[in-house]
Every structure is written in structure tokens, then in C-alpha cells.
Length: 150
Image (cartoon, rainbow, N blue to C red):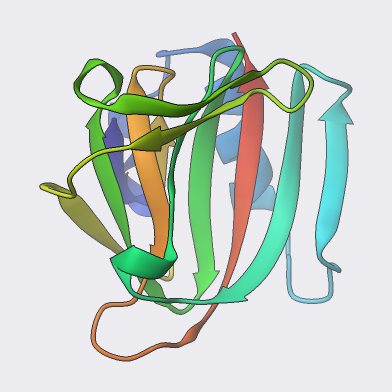
């Protein structure tokens, strides 16, 4: 798991070719008028979902992890906390969904990072995560989540 501001991405360049592509795309794209939904860049290998939601309490959110994809979350608007824990410290709540590539998990929220506009977070398959957690009060978040096939 990596959390930082987009201006510092050069420190992480080279981790994975498609992560580089995703960050380059972020740096070269104006997302202002882009509508929510799925947007392809390289078919199933690299695409992103533009999503908008209201942040909530941890009790209203859920843990998830992936097997075939890693995530790059990038905040366009708002502030949220994203909880993260090692996958092997979680309990599988629902069997792996092969089609949509996710596990639903249960576990304790011990670690979280606060993301604001311009922050990104890279989550690998071993990183269970809980997104959309409110910081002080509920607020609207607009972000993109790149799905990178590994």
C-alpha cells in the first residue's frame, strides 16, 4: 500500500508499467466534465471507474480486496479516509467473486489514511481496504479508481 500526493509520484515510478500509465493519464487529463462510470484505456488490462459518493461511518462501509487487479485511487474532490489492513488478518465474509474480482471481508479497522484532492493510494491484492469513511462529517467525494491487471 502506498499513499502520497500526485506531485511525488516520481518516487514510485517503475513499480509497474501500468501504474506508470495510470499516473501519466491522471497528469494529462482534465476530469472536470467526465461523467461517472467505467472508462477504458487498455481494455481489461487498464481501465478506471469515476465514482461519486457521500462518505459514511466505518459501520456503514465494508472491507474488500482483489485478486487479479490492483487499485490506484485518486481523489478529484472531497476528503475521505481509507482503512487498510493485511488480507491475511481479515476473515472472508463472502467467497471470492471471480467475475467482479473481489472478496468481501470482515475485520477490525486499525489503520487508515486520510486522502484529499490530489492524493493517490495504490492498493495491492494483499491490501484489504475500506473506502468512503468520513473524516469529520459526511461529504461528497469524487474520485477515480484505476483497475490494473497484474
